[in-house]
Every structure is written in structure tokens, then in C-alpha cells.
Length: 128
Image (cartoon, rainbow, N blue to C red; front, top):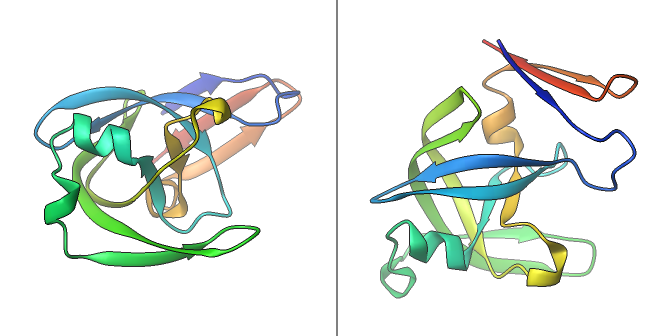
């Protein structure tokens, strides 16, 4: 079981995650139960080895204001502490740096686990 603490008063629940393709890097990803697919920044996608201009697979997603058509990649793995999912799809999107995140952890990662969010104690648990 993976057990992580968070600030229950924070406006975003941000966790350090490792993303891997050709290289492995540490990313700050926000937990987003409303996102069906994990999203990583285009900067992060390039850092782990993707050449975005060569990607032909595209996907659309919508946010509060519009729909975006973005590259879709398959990560070798995505890990949140010791909770790991291999061969997981991620969308690549330009995330403004002022947001302070490198992307979001979506349901395609979260649905691989039984999840507990204890806001009184500020604890996230993930178990298979």
C-alpha cells in the first residue's frame, strides 16, 4: 500500500511522480479525478525523450474554456511513490509555469488502484 501525506487545505493536491520513456524524470503532478487521461507538459515529454513533432497520434480534451487537440504518447511507466503503472497513455499539453505543476494524474492511472483520500488527516492511500 502506498501512503502519502498532503495539505488538506491546498487548492491543488500535488505529488512528486516519476515519468519514464527513454529517460526518467521527476514531475509535480496534480491529482485530478475529473481528468480521464493523465496529462504531462510538453516540456516534460521532451525531457523524457519524445520528439513531439514526430508524434502522429493526437487526442482531444476539454477544459473549462475550450477543446485542445494534443499529442498522445505512451509512457514506459508513471510512478507515484511506489504505486507504478506501466505503458500508460498521457496527453502532452503546454502548461503555463505559473500553475506550478508539470501535469495531472488522471483516471487512467488512478483506476489501477483502490484509492483513499482522508481530508481530515491529509492522507492519500493507493492499493492494488
